[in-house]
Length: 205
Image (cartoon, rainbow, N blue to C red; front, side):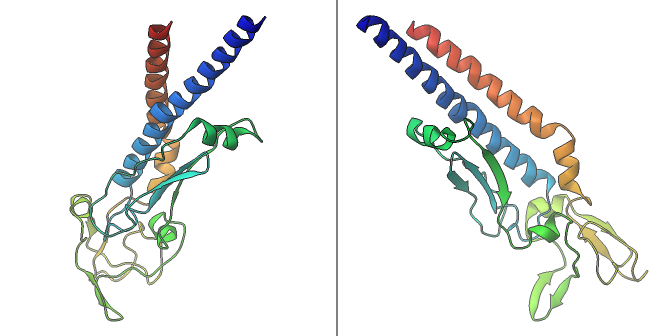
């Protein structure tokens, strides 16, 4: 009986470790790749928004640089078995959340109206072009001014003599989220981790 109890305990330990392996080698790398997709598809003028993404899983967080500049990869948190068990103790599942911490996120995600301009405004040098190479590469310029107030990605509609521009298309975020890329990215990473974990388990048997 003692031997059976020990074998059952070992099996439970292997199952738990298998789950941690999938989280650590599948879900978290998948989340990191999702952030790369968000950075690629999203706007970039100073780069602050691109570098303000955060990954939270099992109560642990991995956060971008929150600084201006070219987009930098965001590393997810490293998890222990104890952290996963605590996070899953009440609901039986481990929650994953990806969020942006920039104060300008409402403007960047086209959910908040604003007044967008170039040059110097209120003593602040906004510039005539994006500060990042990523933004310059994706810059869309229209020879038509903006409305006095509008969404970041909504170009034109203002003075014909003006210029309006954006480094990401209007409603880029819902387009990305509904386009299937997010699910495909996570599925690929998780499936890869499952195969690796199974292979590792078979070698131990």
